[in-house]
Image 1 (cartoon, rainbow, N blue to C red):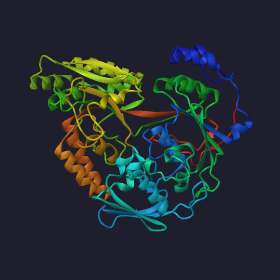
Image 2 (tube, rainbow, N blue to C red):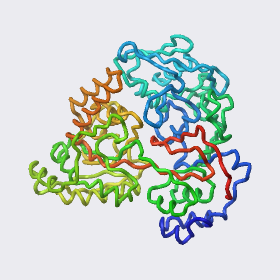
Image 3 (cartoon, rainbow, N blue to C red):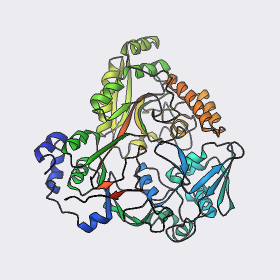
Length: 534
């Protein structure tokens, strides 16, 4: 590999799993080269899986959302400094503390099918998600909306059932990306809309070849002509992490995620630029807060003191993560820098166990997925917890069915069965909350939330979450969020473990691209510089 690692060095650096990929693909320089025409017009992005849907009404995965936002657009948007700003709405206001929201829409915007973007289109989109007949799994986002009105051609009005101050933040989510009403109505089955989606975004959908590619083409009529610079964008599913790295090295991919265990090898190879930022997400170990022994806050706190987060980040993840200091990423404006955090203190953990009457220790079952990352976490915390008297048995499940295991104990209609036979004591989970504190605290800690997998209930937390809903001033909301974090930390419903890093490799010919901390592909103003030998 000219300018990179040799085959032997690659195998030593990233393990024998690369052997099959090398056999199939050959070393860099021996694969089929991309033509000059292809290099000049097409940006190829390697993704970890094929899409499930491109319909905002049914999107649940961050990966699908990252492609949906190329084709469609929401009303609002967070910039790189986590500040909420305009997208399809130029500005918005609430005259009554969050009971009514008026969004003033951008002029001169059209859908890819030529139909006009206006208030009626926005109303159609959100009415569709709210309609039970749609059976949208984004339906819960609409639970506080009473009705939607097209106040005039350029103003859409949301009337709420109750004060809902964070609605402008919520509609930034991919579910809020506006679809063409004409395109949906043209479908014999509206659920098939995703096969030929039509939005207002900088790129138009061309085709989806399952397991091979999702192809998009520049929208020549986009309202901001300065941002979409490449002619085509192809998203190519490449599930195997080593294969993605090899294709990056070969130039077959222009941008792709790099598994943390491969990062140093890629850095040393020097054929692609690595970009790395902390992810706006959290990985945690949840407790069953309603089942002994973790129904006792002293045991939950003991577990937190038993875990050496710094060592996990340094040794298990080779520095490619940050220790969690609470339920929010520290980069969010609402993060509470003053609250007390759990340091590594096994003596204090053992004292808490004695105080809880468990000096002889206790047995617990930890659920985990059968991924490399979960295996590392499970093995590490198992030893650290054992040292303070919490003897953990790990049960690993196939990642494709992992979340199905929870359905028997926590149903979508809000019923909990926290002590049913076979239920977990602990579990490993992660959450992508994005740029808003609401995106973490409300779904994960509200007692009535279906995403509260830890069976956590605290009346003060529920009260503070309700208080947030009536505060339209962001600074006032952040103060309440800081109080919430302190209460949650004291309750220790989880082991607040770490924040992963997003690591992406970028071909040197790509200019203007920066990895986004929310994990999305921001392709505006991305172009090609010098086209090197591939």
